Amino acid sequence: MTRVDFFFNVPNKAAHVASLSSRAVQRGRRLMVLASTQQAAEQLGSFLWSSPPTGFLPHCHATHPRAAETPVIIDWRHEPLPHDDILINLDSQYPPFFSRFRRLIEIVGLEEEDRAAARERYRFYRDRGYELRTFDASGAALMKGGSDERSTSR
Image (tube, rainbow, N blue to C red; front, side, top):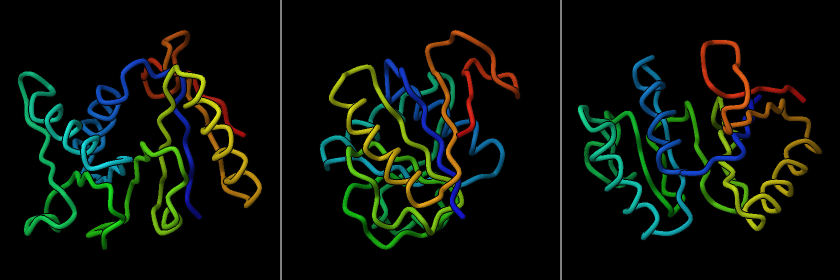
């Protein structure tokens, strides 16, 4: 069953996606990042070209000819996906195909509208019996594994 992780109090979603993606790729994992719109996907793609400043995070859209061998896929259209390891959701709705992934990561910003939508998604996953974990990205405490995020399992 898909494990669902919520990262909340995230001040910069693009930077958080870059950080999570970089760590996952270093561990040999593959990610799909679901943006809410084409513009949001393109902005995230532009951000990833320059983050980290001294490195490179390979990424492309789901329809790109090299998508099958690219570790980070950014899309907004719910296209057929080349892999099903980790899904990062940046949309306000739950992704209808999330259960095919081993792990779903929900990124929640500081805005009340974003937090309200995240609470709805949290209830959706909880009511269906998914394992839920929450991480406070505000840096208030240390989580196991050396991260600067606080974790709580639900």
